[in-house]
Image (cartoon, rainbow, N blue to C red; front, top):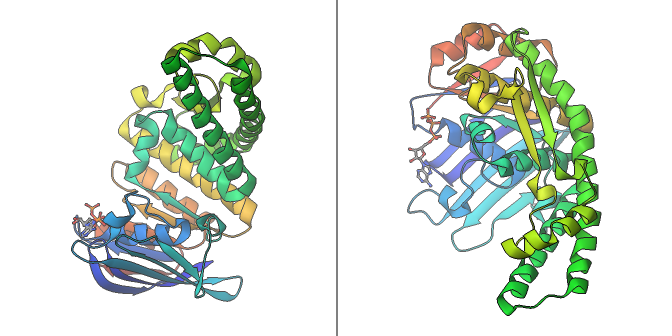
Length: 359
Ligand SMILES: Nc1ncnc2c1ncn2[C@@H]1O[C@H](COP(=O)(O)OP(=O)(O)OP(=O)(O)O)[C@@H](O)[C@H]1O
């Protein structure tokens, strides 16, 4: 799968801009704030129907303009696929494939597999468990449509149960039967989600470890450890045990919405004990493992976006990453960097064709 061309209209800082891309490596270089990341984000938008960096859709429209349009022409399975995403202020976003509007965005997810590696990934280390659950969920959802539906059902039931707990507290009342209906549903969806997360991580963790080993030349040992309350008991039992606590808190304190993924280096949390370069290597390994996982499942090479990844990495690690990209069968790559020389030096080591776009 190749992104042949991209055109932007009123997207972030661009009024009108077009690119014809190289099938292998594309380097977007230029000064800070020139729009390098915005180009990568537009490509992300075409795969996921939203920005990776700014979740408020209207803020992706150029200031003082009324709409944006992103057009991408892909070659996939020997066919041209034209994807267009547009947004008018005050209206709903529209995604079209070959001129036909998608009824549901979820139908588009997974059609153009893509992995982004960016400095914003640091949130996975420094932020709360929610960010890490979202990462696991987004990787599984790209390959398993049922998973997303189970997750939506679980979250809906959870919100209803929490509202009921609040209602009980406010009205000094309680009805075990109504609560039980929600417990039953949470138990069913929760068990399905827990099994899928566990199963996914059993495959994912060894891939991640081998990616890290390659980047660091085996210098450090890292691990991902899944932690879920469902390891100890089924959700039905957990909900029963936590009942008085939940009534006091007025929300559900147990379930798969409390799951976490611990990031460890030499058996200690990387957040506290990893250097900046080690943390960056960890995140790159995590995303490359995502790449491998998606590739195995979809059978196509996902597009790989490398946003500003060379900073904070020593030369040895940079060349290890470049070597990985060269050795194995990666697909199309987009790299953004402020240093044109550094990028050119790095991509010259790769025996692939490349193009440098100076913004
Ligand atoms: N809706 C918008 N309208 C106009 N400009 C915007 C909009 N959203 C973001 N920008 C501008 O885009 C620029 C940032 O672009 P981007 O993050 O792509 O830069 P970059 O080249 O990757 O920079 P760096 O090297 O610092 O990472 C900023 O100048 C910002 O003000």
